Image 1: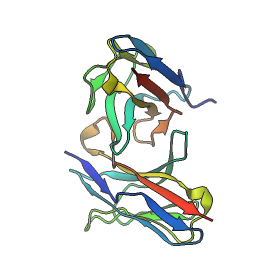
Image 2: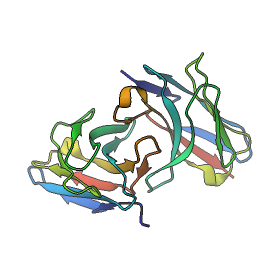
Image 3: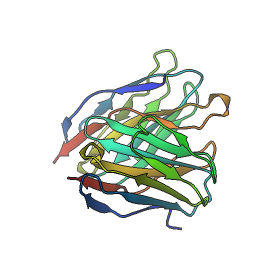
Image 4: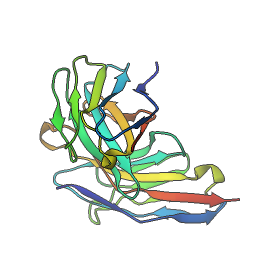
Length: 115
Length: 111
């Protein structure tokens, strides 16, 4: 079945540091890939997505590139802020065969950014 | 446009009690989902629906039932709550090939 593996946290960085959160996946067909963010006490919000190989998703300074050859979708940001402190989830959605388009999530990575 | 709303926000149950969680969306989405979130486990799919009157099992359906009598509502029921069902429950909805939108969550504690 489909699965997502992301680096375990917690990750603690200082403000303006570079961020990488690794994500790899296993899926049949050609999935779409997502990064969701969950701020404390809130639901999940879509951060960025990519729907085909070599696509780069970007939003709020975050980027991730869909790498089919390495089955990866690593999240990066060049300079993190305190306000980026949250839990980040990598996810995939199977698109093949007109299926239910359900999301398969990684376990989440807690990011804490200190001033 | 309220998006996806969930009722209640927080609930405490005793083992064996029943309750229903309500999810409502005003975006005319066809697909709706119920997830549970537990520490270190990410989000796991409980049940989902691809349209009014249809439901299907997800990854962890045992102990839960669902109904989708109206397109905008998706109900999650616990007939006999157990401590293992202590969790945060999230509802989500989407159009066929678009992004899932999540509700704010319901925190459930079963004693």
